[in-house]
Image 1 (cartoon, rainbow, N blue to C red):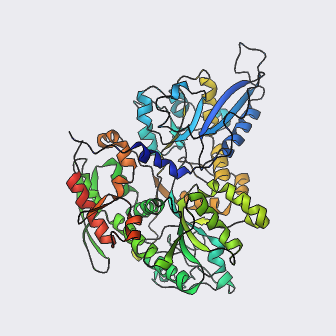
Image 2 (image 1 turned 90 degrees about the horizontal axis):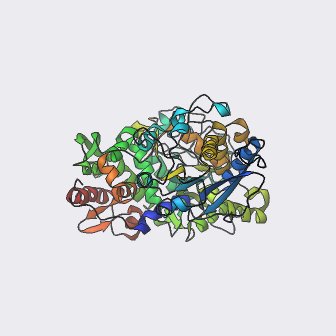
Length: 562
């Protein structure tokens, strides 16, 4: 049967953008210690960095300082963990070379799990994932017991495991809390929770000099992380108008070289509008779709219907209302006025630096309220923070600056408070090389890395999350930046979708379903596009309804069960 054209290697590798392109540690910068057993641990040189891993390695070394891992060599006591960070540690580029690598344990990205498993590249770690508890570290459960269930199902190969999830990569809108406070961008509580859903509310005075209570936000509850932020798309549009017309602040920024970021952020908005079960259909490809768009009114209201979908006709899902809502948010709110947005640097690193420094010197730099990026952005911008700290002192440090992950507003007032759904667009795994001669030690290290304490430390250090159930320890809470606290708060309340399934069609075309092509490929009167942000920005497609209707036009014509 015919198949869609294979996605190019360059496009596949572009998934690595979600982890950025910065790193600090020179490869193989530590030498072996002849008095200790050596364990080599590798990680991809990207936005996650290696600091979290180096810190964890030091704790592991301390814990087992007196242990003997090579009984036949009485001169070796303890373990020397050598952490290396390199761009070559990429799951796809290592497909043919992994068995000959020198590292034992890997934390990396852009991994086609089943390709590696079928080639025998990954060691069988079933025992430490689902059989053995973490009793060695004072925990009763297994790694599997705290793993995301959809991820666990995908990784199970005939009830065996050859890898575990690494990090979550969630695209979205980042916002500067200090800008929101200084310029009066938060909404004031109307006096009732129902009133907080109104299209137009009052904004606080700059710096909230009147001490006003903030509105309930999209979760519909007072006194938590999303207070004062837009509860609905209408409120978000009013916020952007207020910023544009009443302040000197620029509402949105994005990196010129990463113009896929806003469209990927809209996938998160699409997921939240759909909810967990409906969004999962885009990967399981089987079930009842309950909000397919029948018609779109002139005012943007939609009429919906339900229908069953199967792998043979899953193109019907390109009529999901949540996707239309996300497109309307992008076209009307983000790009609805040229004053709403600005490229604030070519690369993602430039854009991050410019987003950070505006509030430090508003007279010298543009001040941005919000910025499109991924959940890893703050950690990726570590060098930018360090450079700005040299110029502006402690005020520019991650621990002092006030950023947040923008809670997702709801399309309509009647959906406020109906829960949060996030979409992780990461494709990252941790695994052990099948040809390692340190298998038992590597397994022990991987277990150690999945204790609650180490998962907590990862989030405190990187300001990112992992797809496991864990709480942040009190000591780590004290170390977390404001941004990390913000992301963890919304993550704790959310259901997170990981884009995997064992449906045959999905399994046979993983690169297609993992890429933007299954989300945004459209045909509008013969004009093709696969990035709505670019299409709206350059004017090749001028409305969300046109782009949305073109999705079904394209997929219904090109869909072939394969």
